[in-house]
Length: 237
Image 1 (tube, rainbow, N blue to C red):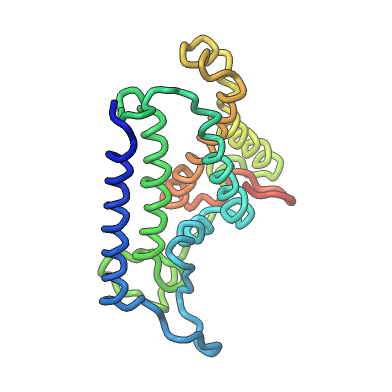
Image 2 (image 1 turned 120 degrees about the horizontal axis):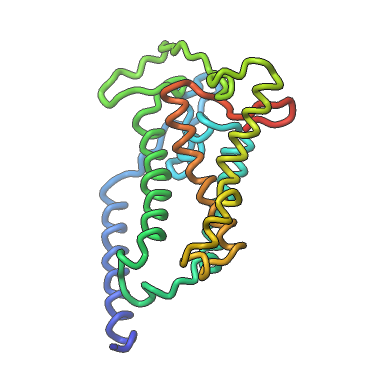
């Protein structure tokens, strides 16, 4: 046990000053990568958001705007806010440990690095004109067209009539987002459930399901051109 001051605080101050000097020198020697002034007669193709919003723009490829632009970002903020209330495990406080925090650390790394950073990289380096996918080194042909026929997952599973697609789609959505409730009787018998509780278990499961819906949809869209799980006149999921 050592005091925070001066051992830790002094080191953090020195690191902060070093980063400040490095960023200052970098900004003096290298110009910011600004583009030309906006021209109403020449619209860039593709028109990309700033890099920190490219993850959201890439998600619009797979989801409706209400889901990718409002629901998912809102749940990200809510989920990060709820972490101290959902995860009350005292292990890891004041020291680094992976074996005692496997689920928490792996889930965060997968969500941040495996999803968010990967989405930004894909949108920055792999999305060209028309928001088409281009491999590194491939010419960004502005006239490229991709013959893609999007289908709903229930139709792909054999549900062709409207009522059958709605029924199968409802079951799919219920399973994806409702599995924590379905597995509640089994989870109650687990030792970790006693520390987590019913409410925190259900909230954690819902947030985890929402996060996993993104890679599931990306894979299904890339392999089978799946557009929706559930399509109705009022809501598409």
